[in-house]
Length: 370
Ligand code: NAD
Image 1 (cartoon, helix red, strand yellow):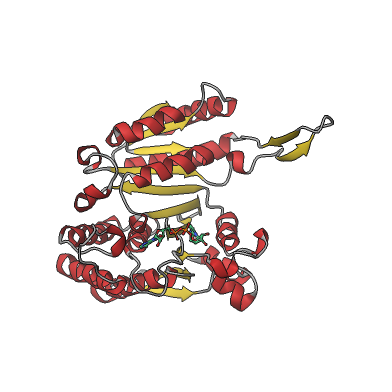
Image 2 (tube, helix red, strand yellow):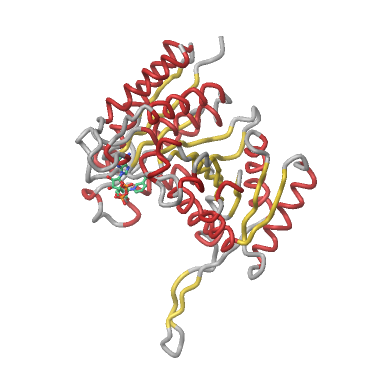
């Protein structure tokens, strides 16, 4: 019998616990019906942790996260904690987890479910069948480089400085994730930078190419300037498979790609770190959306982003692609069958609650996979 997988569940604030509740039901289903057993630990994070422990994440939780096979997070934040100093805000809990676990590769899939093709602002033929992956470097680049700061010059002029900086290991480790992802998908990587105007972009391009030539010649590699990529994403997004890019460009391009698919309530994400000696990467999975205080406590949040984050965990942390396909297939069929939470419903269309959407996905899982 393989050992149970250790999962740390961090529901967080607002709709976080509501959507995570549906993941809990799915975990039970996998245990009962697919003999896939998990050892679950649940801890507080964000505002919920501040209220009880006085900090947005405790050392013990970070320790548990470090030793887990994967971490699943709901969402953090809310008005109650908005007036706290920056260093004590709920979001710092999430940032600390990313930093302490060394999660440098942020995966944001943009998948357009056929049933939701009308939710995109682009023409149906442009987005129908879309399935791309934006891979963003998460712990380096201009958001972290030094020197940084705002200074006042002798003549009274103020000057703001940030520094874009990447080293070869930083570029190689994220590019490696990109090539490995591509091998499990459409086998194409597009590396994105601004080598035409930035030295860090020249280095990025050269090093990605070097790694490709040395170890990943079986994967098709292309290079693109970030401004062109932004344009191509709305012109013809289906030309891409995996896009790998730095922290700044990835921040923007992943949001742009996400919106091709319609709603925030549908978007999962993963953040991965280095593999250990067994090949297991530290990993945190979370929906892209926040704690949605405007609808929290009403039982109407869309749980699909959180359920699809669980599917990503099955695929990338547990190497259970077939089980992940099952969850994604169940979601696809439920949407095709017309079930909608409020965020993805057309005006006047009937809507279901968070729990009803969870039940519909579980019923479909049962039909597809039991
Ligand atoms: P948000 O993502 O929480 O909400 C934006 C809009 O989308 C809201 O109208 C909300 O009702 C809707 N929405 C989001 N998720 C939904 C879902 N699953 N189902 C249905 N509707 C959904 O972003 P915001 O309003 O800018 O931020 C609210 C709080 O969340 C803030 O405190 C912010 O700091 C925090 N936040 C946290 C994370 C995170 O935990 N990773 C990410 C973004 C924002």
